[in-house]
Image 1 (tube, rainbow, N blue to C red):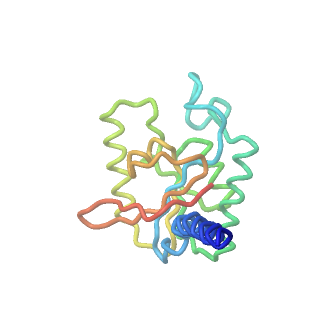
Image 2 (image 1 turned 30 degrees about the horizontal axis):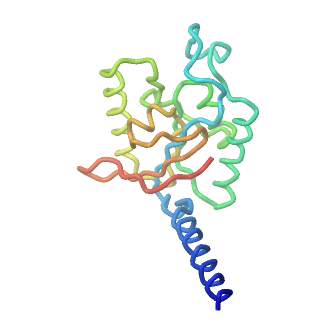
Image 3 (image 1 turned 30 degrees about the vertical axis):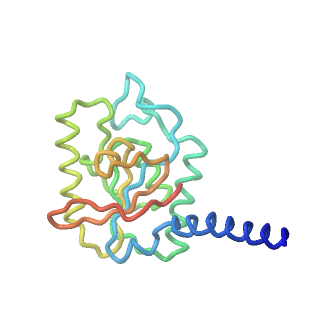
Length: 187
């Protein structure tokens, strides 16, 4: 009798562990033919940028490390393995976002200043830039998935989520309701 209770308890425990894991499966199907995914750039060791930072000069910026370059390549491979049609790839003007996009989706990136980092900016600048980013996302109609490679602060302002390096947040733009988070794509 005792053995049967242990078996039943083990099965119940396995089910409670397995079911949430299934519910947390990455939302690849939710991307659909005209989906939107916001990726935080791949791993770039450190925080912020050095004091001498200048746009257009990667030597003055915090850049991808080896782990970040591998993450970016794997990101593109995951899209190709699932035959996900990418319609457009937008990036901030920071080298780490550009490099992430180029390694994942070679030759596809287009700069979009609305997705530039505002890590060291004031609240008014952050709000203006977030509204400009929302307008870009609201206008997306495909065909294909809109991939945006940007920064943690931008994604957090748009979604309330603090993404990991290389993580994607799948969103959908709803008229009059703004952005709805559909799910997360782990790095």
